Amino acid sequence: MFSKEQEQEITDYLMLHKLPLDILLEVKDHMISQVADIQTEENLNFQDAFHKTRKLWESEFKRTTYSAFFSEEIPVIVKKIVKERYFSIFKKSLLLGLVSAAVNFASVFLMKDAETYSLFFQIQNGLFILFPVAIWALHYKMLKYIKSDYKYKGKLYYTMYQQNAAVTISMIGIMGQIVSKEGNYPYLYFREHNHDEIVYVLITLILPFIVQMMIIFVMINFFEHKKSLEKMKEFLNLSAE
Image (cartoon, rainbow, N blue to C red; front, side, top):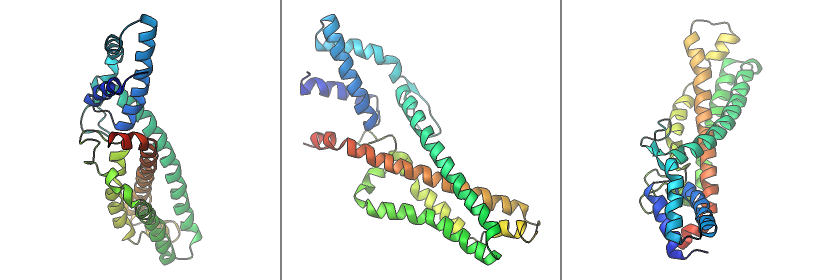
């Protein structure tokens, strides 16, 4: 329908707005379809139809902030897509984090003594270090694609998930600090009725839950990042030619 040069013109236009590559390709498909429809319906040449399409998309490319995840301004359309998909990932992370927290709390009443509970606490949280490290080891060829400074043509993130996947190292570091502690305050409080360290009880119950949830969040981002790269494989191979 369009020549390679015309498709490249649309790609170049979208690159100017610094959309992550996975979103760029989604938007590009919509724009190509829209340009083609305008050409057919209004009997216009490519340049005029493309100009009209750009006008229709103008509001979507206005810059806005999303400080929870981006340090710089992003296009409105990126914020809309990212917000929807991150919220879905967050809900999954929260649910799995709550399941893990429930297991931890139940273990307070199932373990025979404080030492056994402490060992369980360290093993449970240690798994949240082991799992990401094992996944990274199995996907070592992908590691360059999760660096926040590794960008398509030096300009664009490969996917909207890339920078979140890169946070995994920080989360593992925090979890390492948690695993190094005995973490037996909940057992002492609930089973031995030692109420002297209520602040530490709360920290021991809440902090691991938050970090576990964040590790789950970044790992789901990792798998979504991987899935998006797989979908873009053909495009990336072609663009490298």
